[in-house]
Amino acid sequence: MVTAAYNEAENVPKLAERLRAALKGYDHEIILVDDSSPDGTAAVAAKYFDRVIVMNNVGQTASLLEGIKEASGDLVVTIDADLENPPELVPGIIKAARDMGCDVVVASRTWLPRPAEVIASATLGRLLGVRDLFSNFRVFRRSLLADYNLKLGETFGCELLAASRLRGAKVCEVLYRPPPRRRSPRIGGTLKANIRATLAWLKCAYFYVGLSTAKALGLNAV
Image (cartoon, rainbow, N blue to C red; front, side, top):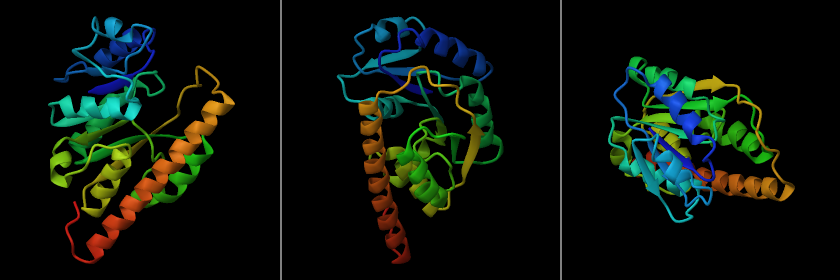
């Protein structure tokens, strides 16, 4: 299990407690990747998590990907550290992967806060079979990383979905209602988030079109 955190010192004890309760009975390891949080997140997390990795201000996605590279289980679960992804749903998405034969299970929010996320999920997300294109809350088989030879980049999650769909892997989805946001985003922050989401959507669409074209031509792109 992998989570990435920045300035979440207050939340990591609660996150760890809820994850341990949810994962009771499962053989698991929980990795937290801290992106040089100034509030001491790493020091607090070291008391609660199996492994803590500290990065040097690389951003959430790069931090999460570092944790994925370090994960050793057959199934990798990723979750946000801010408690907006309910840890209690983890057994359900693991069960879907194991019992239903799903290669990727995405926990999708029923409400998306940003216009760019809504548009991206209504277009490319629909093609890929999920309602929340940018959800970090998911489980996937670790073997897919080697099978698809994917680059661990900014749009990894979306590319994993695209490659899985086009290669015939089984993609499943679990829906959940996200809790109220703890903080109202600033206008500038919201604008930047929408721009980032739009760029990620375009990059993933480009990847998907390229992959679809290669498949149509009988080429093995991934």
